[in-house]
Structure formats: structure tokens, C-alpha cells
Image 1 (cartoon, rainbow, N blue to C red):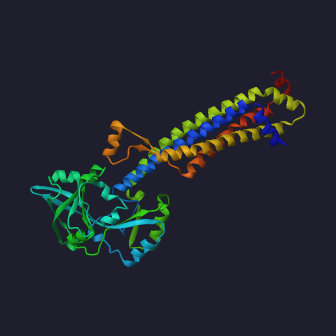
Image 2 (tube, rainbow, N blue to C red):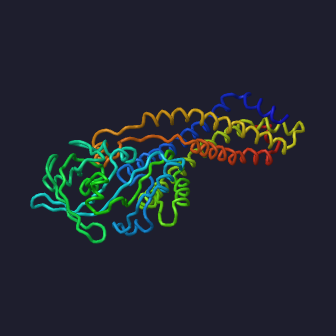
Length: 404
């Protein structure tokens, strides 16, 4: 009975009800799009950063990350390869052998990081071929090298020139070799641009006298949202001699940056919720003021204040719920559109982003939890604010109300 009465009351004054629903609707859309854009920007930034070099997930020998030397290299055994092939959630994996050397050309010398890679597999990890600015891409049997543009510039070398590498191999042996420059690479990160040199994995193993050994296996997951679960599975099955690390563990400074930015965004959302609260409260205040005579007459003819309060609660619930649902339904296609057609920067701002390897875009996230969470928060705000008309119902004096 009260539900039917509340529903009819809503449409007795359509403009008032629609204004209240519209305030809730706008609140939900604003909250959803704000949260979706924030999450989308960070997801895109993480994709760009891990796409530089580290990847989302790496397997090392126990202790390698704290002491990154060839002594902590390991052999990718058949059992480990089988684990990588049979574990669900792995898109692709690639082995690497890394060490530090002195690179020289003529009288110029500079320290750099030599990375032995499986060129074809690295395509699925960091899209290495896309970073090729000049020259040709390595193959697994190629005896040449690819270097960062800035490193090549500092050594005054180009495609077709020869670079000499000198370092320390396994068991204290001397690592020395000459390699022809096959290609120049452009990384968004200046640090990588100045310090990276890539060889095919067999060539790097020969250079460092580390036949069959690697320092890491980089993994690309099929679903980045299940990264921690995948890391836990691999950690349990890889054995105690290996460590499995996610990008969060390898780049804690990035996690701290996200946490700091998230804290700032929570403040912005808090201000937004405050504005939303005033908007919803103003419509409820208008509704109570306009219906004082109606409430007085209902109480005068025998309607208990408790039932009047329940009726107002149901009205508030229907209005808030309707506005929230419509807001979610409208925000879904907007968020999906912004995910496929992100906001793009132009001019100097775009140049700064692209110089550091970031896409100059503001995409939106389409995670279901964003829509549900923001819709629920606004719904709760609306229900909490509905306490005002309920309080007014209990404090109502029928005679005074009917005189208004």
C-alpha cells in the first residue's frame, strides 16, 4: 500500500520528481566519469612504463634483484619451460641475459647494459621492433647489435659501424667482442636511450661465457588485473630457487606515485560528493517545503507519522535508485566511447608526453567495479540525505502545516 502510494506521489508532481532524479543522475555520471578517467590514465601509464623494459612479471634466480650479477644467472630447465607453457594466464614469455660492460668506438668509451634477448618473443613483451628508429631488427641467429639512439650519439656511431664491448663474464672470465650495429632504438625513457644495447640471446651467452644461462624470464599476462594471482601461482610452483616479481615490486616508486595521485583524486572526489550532496539535499528541501500542507492533511485524517516517514523513505529510495540506475546506464556508453576515442592532447603538452614515451591521451577505464561503486556511493548519499524529510515528518504539526 505504502509503495503504491509513494509511487503515485512521485508522479503527482512530475517536474519536482524529475528535478530530483536529474540531480542524482548528473551526480552519478560525474562521479563515474571522474573515477573512470583517473583509472584509465593510470592503466595507460602503467602499460607505457612496463612496456619500456621490465614487463609486467619476471622470474629470476633467488636473490638476483638485490644482486644483479651473472653469478645469479640460472638455467631455464625443461620443468620451468613446461610450467610457463601450462600455466593459464600467460600470454607470452621471453628469456634475457643482462650484464654491464664498457662500450667503445674509437677513442670514446661509455658504460652500458647489454641485454641478450629472443628478438621474436620480445615483440610480445615490450614491442621492441616498434622502437626501431633506423636500420634492421635482430634475428635469433644475428651476430649484430641494436643500441639506443643517445648511446650511439655519444659514441659517434651509426648503422653499419662496429662497437667493441669489454666486461666480465661468468667465473671471472673476460668478456670481449666486436659487433656490427644493425639498428638504432628510440626509447621514451632518456635513461634507457642512453644505456641500452641489445644482442641476440645466443650471442650474449657466448660473450659472457654463460652458455644456456639467463638472468630473467619476462612474462606478459593475458589479463593484467589477475597479475597478483598469476604471480602467486608461479611463485608456488617455480620452487624455492626462483623469485617471481611483479612490476609493483620491481618499481615501488611507481606504486608510490599512483598512491599519491590516488590520494589527491580522493580529495577531488570528496569535494565532488560534497557538491552532489548539496544538490540532492536542495531538491529534498524543496520537496518538503512544497508538501507541508499535504503532509499536514494526511496526519490530520489519521495517517500515523511513522507510516508517513516510511512513505517518504520509499519515495526517496525510488527517486535516488532511479536516478542512479539511469546515471550508470548513460555513463557506460560514454566511458566506452572515451576508452576507444580517448581525449588527446596537442601542441607542446603532447610533445612533452611523447618525448618520454607516453601516449598523449586521457583514456577512460571500463571496469565494472567503477560504475557499481560510484552508483552505490551516490545512492547511499541520497538515502542518508532522505533522513531530512523523515525527520520533518516526525516533527510535523498538522495544524501549522495545513496553514502554510
